[in-house]
Image (cartoon, rainbow, N blue to C red):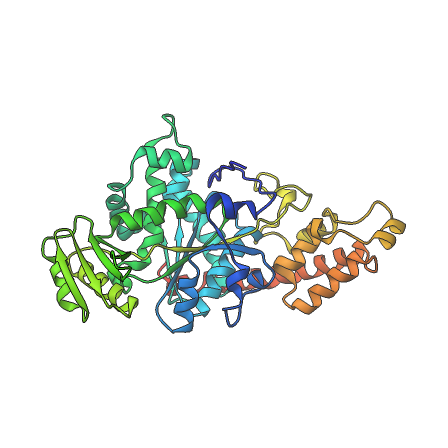
Length: 432
């Protein structure tokens, strides 16, 4: 396929399964059953893939710390596509995650030329207010990249581990790419790793909910997390087929390997540059000890971040949803009655005639109106399944679905915009 995923461009993915082979993304349905109360995006397979999400499910099961982090580039109004990410953040927060939301004003400034003042205005009015209205709690962290000393300092350190060749391979940067654009990419890695800084409790699993087009940021950040760490642990086998662990130094301070060996309850052999550990029956204990020593010696001991990937919504008129085509999307600030009219004009999966619809059934999987019901408007899975079945067997006509979806959309936007007004009064609770 040789697909190029571009976080700043237009990506059309016709077959999401190809991402598994090409980019190493894993199917989410294989892990969904381990969640006690999966979000509807998970249940309905709109979240289709992940990287290392087992770290998050383990943390949830064992009541251990984990974080969720994602962000928004303030270049235009928030719409239903952004609502997907907001809901995923909020769900993880409710499941016990420490939640971080970054407004990527450095990215907007460097990539789109948006002024700092405009970035702040859009960030608050179009994204943060809707995020709060949807249920984001004040114990989470909302920040602007340009105002976060943590993010700026960490981005500088991370940049020492990255080079132009790597950024070019991941993002397609060329000699024409401005340096600020490159800095903004590293800044996003700092956003992703910030939840693991000592002031937020240190190393922990962190999940980043994104669309598949954002995977380049994940690949860069996971690589940088490995590069930043002082040690790596390898499973090995001696000549007699006995298994053991080897803790390898990556420019760690002198004496730190000896510190690790002294703290471990198992047999160890110290060599120059590594220690071998025999009889270790608790990998988590070994990992915890290595991380503790790294942090005490000024390191970070980052856990490579996890991620989930959701499908893109179609535009209301078919094709891709695009902010440059107002009729293709519904804004979270849109007049509810006008939004309802948009839904009534949306492209469906209906047949060319009523007779053919009754005979062959509709094509719900190609219908933007059914997508609205599935993604945003119908919470009950049984109700949604009935709508689907009635459509494909020819019992349900497109007008029925349009009437339902337009009514539900108007109700949702009316309610959401009332909550937005209340959210504006609570900005101080979020440090804004």
